[in-house]
Image 1 (cartoon, rainbow, N blue to C red):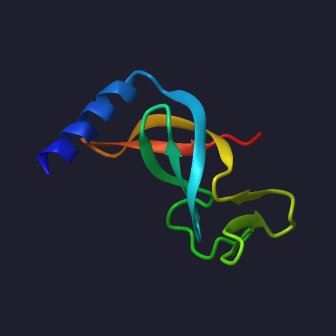
Image 2 (image 1 turned 60 degrees about the vertical axis):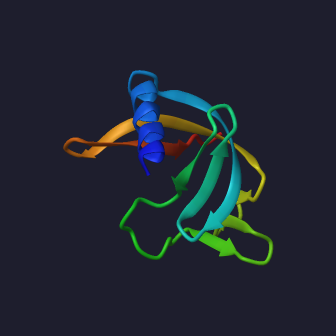
Length: 107
C-alpha cells in the first residue's frame, strides 16, 4: 500500500512542472474511452472520449467483438494495441487532491 502511494506521489511530483505529449498504446476499450499504457514512463491510465459525468456517449459507439470504439459517422476509430498521442499533465479537480490526467491529442 505504501509503495503504491509513494509511486503515485513521485509521479505527480515529476509531471507537476513537466506536462508532456507522448505516445501510448491502447490496452482496453471502455464505453466512455479507453485505457492506455505509456511505455516511456510505465504508466497506465484512462483516456476519456466524452466528458466525465456525461451519460450515453452520444457520438461514440463501442464494438465489443472487434474491440473498437468509433464515431457514429465512422470517421475516426480506435482499437486495442493502436498507438495514439496523448497529453499528460497534473490537474487539481479538488483542492489538495492532484491527479495525473491523460488526454487524447487528435491528429
